[in-house]
Length: 587
Image (cartoon, rainbow, N blue to C red; front, side, top):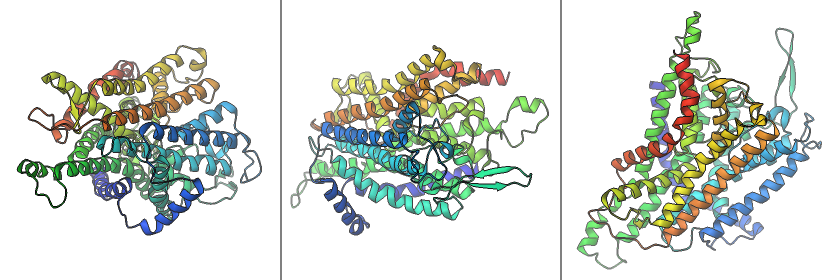
């Protein structure tokens, strides 16, 4: 418990300055790095023909994002199909099969990074860098850019300008992802993670057998896969192998890398909303504010609490999940205890001894809460309730989430919460000073429905047709959990795997590819549409009946709404999977 507590406290100390730094970048304010990065950005703008001062409305922003991602998908697919060429391919890897190429490129462009292949045997170094590592930068920056545009829309400083997508994309890569990756990558190399272009090494073991030790640009991929909340891995065993995650220090580096930017995004949201409230609360320079305005200005310094209430709601859900996962794994496996095997260390099946139950539970909860998709233990071997936590957090898809995804999804539930509270008191709901009306509620409801629809419909299809059933290698409750996990990971753009599925087939490649595609882009477009609708509305004056959304009470309301509408949506299918397996195991 002390180990977990210290890990979380260090995160809270680190996330605040990072959040302030990201806020300055998102708001176009001065940062200490401007003298260097302004020059780099200008070169990129000139080469790309981008006018950074030209704003976009939400429709143009969404089209720019979709068009840029579409071009990347086509180029990446082509590279995967011709990777058998000799360039940067010392291990002689052949071209990737068409359906697997489709699944892979959709996976990495949607920030999912679901892998139906093993990197060391399925990709050349060229593909690892130009498709996998490069896409990790672009997909993470695309999601973060969409979130920043969404926040600008909610802040509502203008009626039709949410920023410039290309400018946001460049600034996020050059000022956040790239410098952070260089520092983090060097730390991983220092701890022993490989970074080279050598071919695989074959060595003789002490037992006289042959063993292949994989080489390649591992560290470069490892840091951006965590920092960009991407997931996947250079190797099939992911961050459970010492080549990707050799020490407890690298484990912490990877943990904080995937936690920092999603947490910082919530702080950025609070500060950008505070800026708008400050502008509303003050008259032009040289004019003494009216007494009522002066009273209102006293509340401005607390306006950042909009972000704190969202952060608190996410934190509550995260801590509950972490507590359940850690407790479940600490209980051990009763079947092994019955045959006389010691369970004093908890359930160590599928876990690395160097991490133990505590850091395995922390990594498991974090990777599925922050939708990263990396693993330092085998999720398939978690206890039923321990495995239900990552599954449920992907189903919720609001517990911090990936680059801005969790925040945007949580705002959907915040809009739903103020709407329900408004119905209870017979008042038109308001959020961030704007009235929530029919158009916003329809778009919000559609956005919330898409996620469970994708997971449950594709899961139902998989257990109904022979092509889906052929991939299930575990009978009964556990097999259903594996199917649910695969589609929850795809729809939430997470990418981690429960494993055990024979998922490299035409059926699983196509269906999970579709789940990843629609789970990513439908939500982003709808959320930008909501922001575009709200930014055109006039601000309403606060009154005694206004529901305050900047306090801890609203955070509790938000948690309750998420549980009622999201968790209960999945309860019947969870009862048929991990809950039934738990009751059977402990009977």
